[in-house]
Amino acid sequence: MYRYILPPIIGAFIGYLTNYVAIKLLFRPHRPLSLMGFTIQGLIPKRRQEIAKSIAQTIERELISSKDIATVLDSVNWKEDVERAVEGLIEHRFSASRIKKIPLLGLVSENLIYHIKYIITRDILEEVEKKKPTLLKRVTENVDVKGLLTDRIDRLDLVRFENLLTTFIAKELRYIEILGGVMGFLIGMAQSVLVYLLR
Image (cartoon, rainbow, N blue to C red; front, side):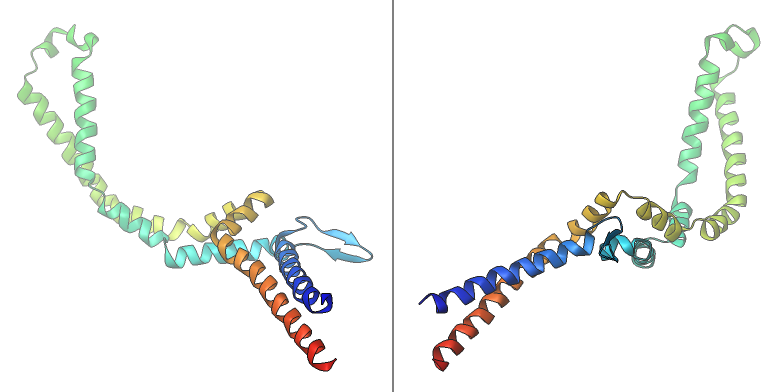
């Protein structure tokens, strides 16, 4: 009886364990380890730079690039932000107690303050508009999204790097482990059937 029951159980255990160890060996050991003349290191830590570059390349191609950043900057409402900044600055300067002590400035009307705001805002916006194409071109040419991401990913601690990768595919890795157990069980069943038929 045991000769028919044991093969599926042992097969399921070996299949599950084999896949579990194989998945762990993708990430471990983190550092190269010498064992009987062989150097062992997890596949992912060993090829970390290539993987980091590949992830960064995919993110740049599919999600965000320097051109996307330039487009966002181009769509920013500079006028509103500049007006708010100038207004805050002028309000602060003209309401400061030390300015109020100067007799001539005490006579400055609201109308004059409005014109000062208008002139400064207009001049700043003209400068921004003039320099915007150059700024956008520099962002497109000099912001290396892929390089920044590659460097950031590559500098991650190996444990954090492993967690980053496994977080996305945790469910799939678990299915692979279970599938190993199922396959082992089925192979064990096939062996039991063969033993039964050949007895």
